[in-house]
Length: 332
Image (cartoon, rainbow, N blue to C red; front, side, top):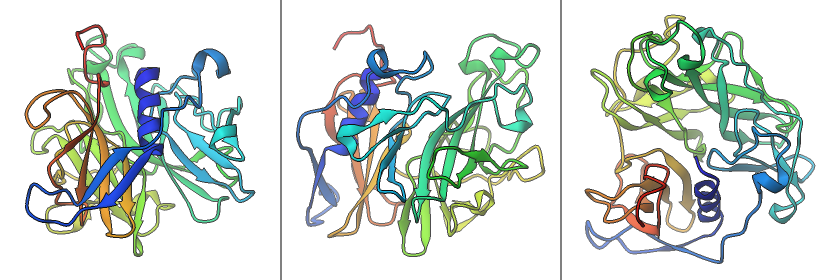
C-alpha cells in the first residue's frame, strides 16, 4: 500500500463525523458520514522510520494502554508501534513488537505478518489478529512461478501481548482464525485465502470482525463476518454461514480447516478498513476502498451502514481519489 493511501485512510478513520438519518427507504443510509478537519501526517517514513521496513502498510489500529498512553499499529512486517500520550505526540518504537520470521514452512504461519486488528480490556493484555502472508515466491521450490500474487497464500492468525502491546507472541500451535480448507500449493497460480481483517468490535457479549477472502471453488470471494465471545482465544472465532455462526475456518495443516463456505456480506469489493458504531442509533459504519465501476461511480473511499453487520445499505462516496486498487500512473 502506498504511503499516501495509508495516510488518507488514517485521516478518514480519525476524522469521521457521523449523524443519524431516519431510515425512510432503501436509498436512505442509516448514518450519514462526512469528513471533519484537514488530514494530518502522523508518521513520515522518510522522517521517522527506524529502517526501510517502516512504511505505512495497513489501516491503523490504536488503543490506550494501562499507563494511559496511546499505542498505534499500521506499519510493515516488523510491526513497530507508535506510542505517545496522545495522537499529536506519537513516536515510533524501534524495537519490533512482532517481527516476521520469513519461515519457509507454511504450516508455521511465520513468514510475513502484519498486526491488523487489536483488542484489549485493560490496556495490558492485548489480543491481535495477524494478516499472515506465506510468500511462496521467496522460498525456492514452493511456487511454480515467481510473481508475488500468483504465489500468495494468506491466513488470519491470532497473537497476544501481556505488556500493553510492546511485544506479541504467536500461539503454539498457531491459532488460525481464518484459514482456507486447503494447504499451500506449488501451482496455485493466484492469491488465495483469508486476509485483511477489519478492527474488532463488540456488541453485547460478542465480538465481531470482517475478514476478506479471495474465494475458491465453493467459496464466494468477498467479505465474511466472524464472531467470538473471547478474542484472546484464537480458536473461538466462527464464521457466519447464512443462518448462524457455526463454521470454524481453522488450520488445514492440523485438520482444523472447514470445507463449508462462509457467507459473504456487504457491498465490499475490497477489505473493510474501518468499522465503527454510531452510538446514538446503534448503526454500524464500514469504510472501504473501491475502484470505479458498478455501484461505485468513481474511485475513492466509500461508506456503508448496517444494523446487524449482515445486511448493508447502498455504498456512498466519502472521499474521491485513487485507491490501492487503481493504477497509480493512470489519469485522475
